[in-house]
Length: 353
Ligand code: FES
Ligand SMILES: [Fe+2]
Image (cartoon, rainbow, N blue to C red; front, side, top):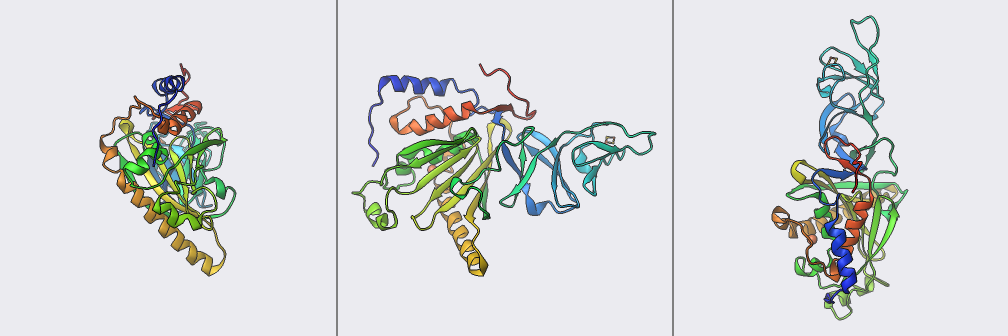
């Protein structure tokens, strides 16, 4: 069980400063430049265009005849028609209103009835299709691939969707649940002790790994001990403060679950649960993976259910940090180091002070 120690005064003061001075964390007007999922791949067939609002910005997302997904700003630079009212033609998109056509870079390539093509341009955004989802990078050039599980880096993966969810609080606040070690005992009744060590994966991703053997006196740990040589596996990797991957399971088989959350109006959260596992060859590999993904989602849903009510009413305010909240403070610090954008406009926040 968790030991409460009184935190040294200097550390406590520093932690309080970090939390109080946070400009991006839990700010309903800001998010971090990165990859955010827009729509399920299967809901965007070749030749289809859909209106999507992502991190407050309106987009027209379509799939051209070459199968590639293109994300354009929603409003036609001629007179502001929503481009999702238009039609996909080849790998371009034609506006419904006066039929100007834009190519996959957003350049106007036809403006019918006029004596020359108007050099108009609508902004286009980088896209990727991973885990059965279309993702959009909310800046100029992606700095990383779509969020991945560190131990599956560079590997081909199978994925399955769990529940979509909405929470009445900011995505950053939902995210810290997975490293709030104290609540594993109080909410989820897990008779284990968890202590995290942090490690930066890159400038947008941070890993928290459990480093304890879990409390040898507990019956639960005694029961699962044969499955673990050293520490009990529990790893969390956070991307952009709003997508997290949890890795749990015995040494011979790790389960990975991703929670990817977008920021909605009024600082609310909308998320998608995705089970991920390494691709395995052959029919047996395929079948095995279906079972692994099914188990992963059951475990994910069990933990997500335990906190449902809490996120309806919480007003996050870490007024009294304890030693057990150290990882949460480290998460907040890491969110503050990343590039903040304004919700809705996706403009860079210039003045960080
Ligand atoms: S508003 Fe799009 S072509 Fe006129
Ligand atoms: Fe929880």
